[in-house]
Image (cartoon, rainbow, N blue to C red; front, side, top):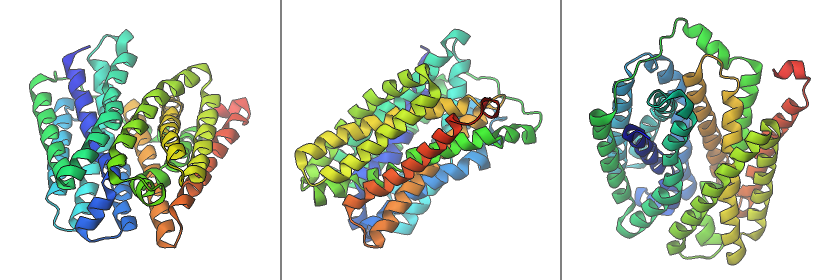
Length: 383
């Protein structure tokens, strides 16, 4: 595998770690910035909505620009954005920095996946994409737990300073080692967007948003759940995030195998699995041993949904692979933002942490309903 693909994987590692490390540090960030934990939760939903905005605002125009220059510039945005987070003097500064940083994520993911396929022989395209997105898996298994542990020990700002440094290294390595690849020429932008307006594409993106997004009513507040409800010390948060990441590592190939077998059934079964796990989290949250097991299965269920949901969207991409890829990332993050926002709103209205997984399960059930409607539609309507 070309070394430049590993550099792209490093970029995705930094991006995903930056996105999710704050969940393990939510109590520390809230205390330092002088806001409540529900208010700090909006730092997560704000980031997710920034990704959603970035897909339509940046991707259609940057996809035609020199790809190496675009990827370097986007990684530069992440470098400066994480530095701004580390130096944030106020909550308002922090959320603004998070949103601006997030604008670049969908384009980097979508463009990075396509560039990876241009760096290898045609028969190795799938393996190239898998290698790039290995950065996401490592971010969840190692990056976020390590960032949480560092933040708890040395202060949450230190975690963002380190991420800014790693992002800067990734940008420099892209400059030095990423070959120049040809950019896609778009003859008609309206035609490109028409792919996204097809009913089957809209339904697939909505299934992604609702089915995946319900998890973030719970995942956003996993740290205070473990400490305030389960009764574990804050020192348990990082190891349990590592356990969560290990569950993700096992769930991803599980979802992939299901999708290879039957894509429509894979979407349904993975979302049903996720709903069952969320309901279980609510039931066992007060019991430490059961909650530890539930955290593992939560990670497994969460990532088992990703391959089926990704493949479902890409199967409708046609001649707009970069746009579809970017908008699928946006759909995931729209769900992330909605889930985190619903969780924060529920807490503000007096809901308990134990009720948040129930709200998330209801949101996932809406996505499952869309998947079921699609699977029972007449064959002529599915195509």
